[in-house]
Amino acid sequence: MAYLITGATGLVGKQIVKRCEEQNIVVHYLTTSKNKIQTTDTYKGFFWDPNKGYIDKKAFEGVSTIIHLAGANVAKRWTTSYKQQIVESRIKPTNLLKKVLLENEHTISQFISASAIGIYKDSLVEFHSENSRCLGDDFLANVVKDWEAAVDEIADLGIAVAKLRIGVVLDEKEGALPKMIKPIKMYIGAVFGKGTQWQSWIHVNDLALMFLFVAKEKLTGVYNAVAPNAVTQNKLIKSCASVLSRPLWLPNIPKFVLQLMLGEMSVILLGSQRVDSSKIQEEGFLFEFPSLRKALLFLFRKEKNFRI
Image (cartoon, rainbow, N blue to C red; front, side, top):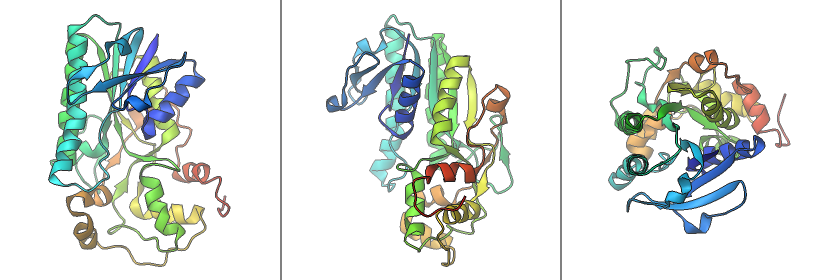
């Protein structure tokens, strides 16, 4: 059997594909760009257009599990039109997958979807488990609520559904980390806001393996996809500076400055979610990178100047 992956060419998707190759799992992937379609014995691309409701149904042939990662990047300026794109890029593809699965014979038994810890309320004191009732009411939280609701409808088809609420993904080349360390490398790094806000993070390798663990173990329900040890924004930036052997001499960037620069999107830097990962660990998942310093040392191992 094969896995069908949406968002396979993104940050997390590429790592999942790599791990599938290591485990001899055939990957089918959906792409909105015909130029990105490749076909090998173990990696096969298929075209889809969620906005037009089109999908190449051959993508489902021989597939047992769908790993659903598709969604527009939230780390771009939130204009009114882009906010709509953030929402639609999550809801439309999910609804299209449901429609195709409902109307056609298939071999899909499992649907694993990305989600986000942005669903949890901004708090310095709450420790959010998957059962937390302390949910946010801002734009990101509402996006995640609608996204998860759309995913939950897949279960109505008799398909096992799991959702991974992902924290800040640490990768050396893509995502949030390169943007964080760029000013640090230039000796102009600084902490955002007061620095007391919690940052629940996960190494990209652990996240990819967690998706495959959920698939292998046939898990259902919600799981927090974060490392066991959340840190404050202050600790995150200082740890990056320490590993890179760079000083932090500038004062914290005040909240109002970030709000002026980024508007509503400043919540990405100023929001605080301390999230519990014990549920997935109790299922038997082992983190390769449970501590921030170990993760950073691995990611920056090619840097010439870092301290172990």
